[in-house]
Image (cartoon, rainbow, N blue to C red; front, side, top):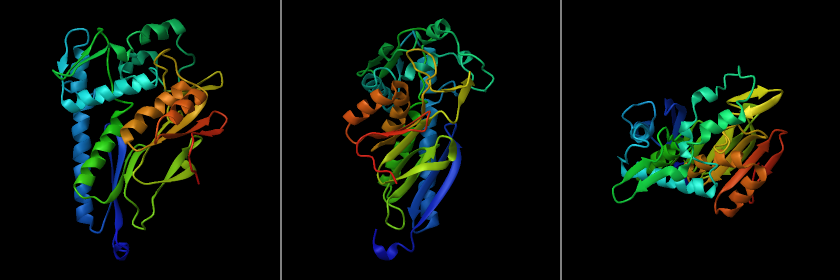
Length: 315
């Protein structure tokens, strides 16, 4: 960005509800009309992806796959097939801590409306999780079909969809010539380029006890950040806080970790890794993160102790 144009460059933003989440799309440009055009392009792209992945629309590809579980394979768009393939790869590296077949957990097992006074029994939870198994997703590359082996199985993209949509919108805007900006999907965000001052974007890491305040700051450009925290939805039972994050292996909520923030080159990957790190626990989670190039994380435990992977630079 030439220095003489810094004064002209501004950040233009729009916030709205998409995919059931609050999205804020920000673009840096000299002209408001050009920025708004980019923002509208991003909105259309996110809406397009929502139509493919939603479970709230009976004819979405996700619901067609779920409705045919145990019956027959379903032909899907190549991008849905590829997203499921990448989801399975993440299930493998997290040893099942990430699993898009979590959709089969009955909502009646969990309601995080603070009226729950006890956890479901281990037996109850076990009954619910028997259908959660990414290994029972059968992909046929030559026909571009997806088949869920067992009746009652359900997939859902709640753990990866927002990041995928943000990343796709970013790529489209970059292709269309948007020099820099941020797409923020309820705290899962992706950035490219620089601020009008030519400095990197400054991202606040939410304080789990005061989510509107920042715990610390990190400077990033051309990176993505995703946070999974228990401060939005949780229950207190016998004075212990249980997160709305469910361990797919047990069907029970995790405890001990307040938040996990993941930094990656890609919003989809950051989004998908934040929850399984919480499920895996501090030591196993950090060990995994440190094995993967260009992936970093910050974990805050129930006692507000902060743990970071290698090469994290906080302010």
